[in-house]
Image (cartoon, rainbow, N blue to C red; front, side, top):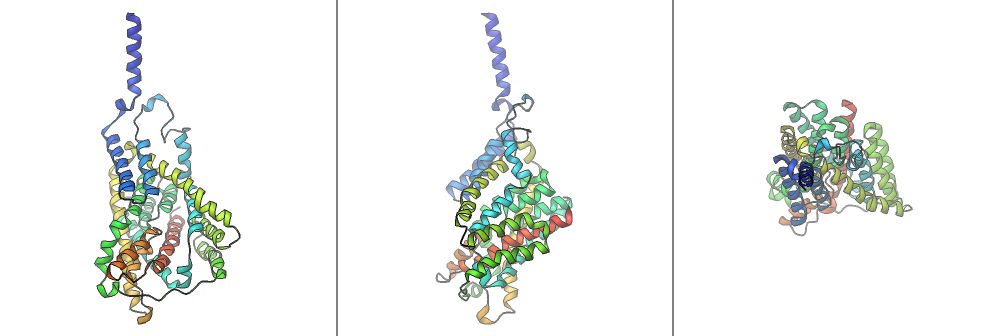
Length: 386
């Protein structure tokens, strides 16, 4: 009996060393609370639930403590584990192009085609990317890391993941979570900036109804868009190529099944896997560093600068336009590529001052231009730094 009790005691002692309770650290507890907070924001506040629930739950999965020396092959950084295999879609950079395929298949570029000058707003908003790039260099990050951090200002999670997988894989977890966090916080961050930089008179500007766009124009746009952008920035081909391909599937009118698959089951599946694995990559030992805090601060800075740049550009641009052609600067915030959330914010803030002023259809122009702009900016940075 004594031998049996000793055997049982030793086995229980060994079992205890394998449990999460034994291996837990303060860092694990902090990250688990962060994951629960993300899920709370998604469920209670409905902040980008399609993104924050997978990421939040992924943070919980990635911060379950276990004995690293046991060779269990369950962690995301353990080669050969299931999570590690799924995470290769992030580290190898093939999740983001597939998401861009789905975005293209669900995007209507009519607002941009009918009023091409709105493309300039999307371009102006990318100033946040390069502003954050300079700030990151000043804080001591190397050029490749600074470029990956700066792309957060485009409010484009897939682009941020794609670029950081190429330039700064060691910072990818913090960059991805930061990018998606600020995308989710669009309704919180953008309205104060928009109100601060505009006057009541400017907020009441009513824009001309966009002209009708023909089917031929819609079909030609992804073809011309691909050739123009990728001849200019070939390094943006993985993202821009898939974006315009998805849009051609939608607008051709003869590949409806393919378009529905791209914007439905495909993008939903990839979004789940990407969110879960990005969240799981935020293991406390890898994530809780001073660099992560700097990245979150720079991400907020770049997002605010991008929003302000879009609004201020419209104000300056209006000085060169005739009275009947002026643009409401409240759509300047939509130059970031958080589609369609930032366009909705343009509508919501505009309706506060003039309930009959429908800005959403106009804001979608710079919004979809921002998607193209952030991908082009990523291609420029990738081309210069690799």
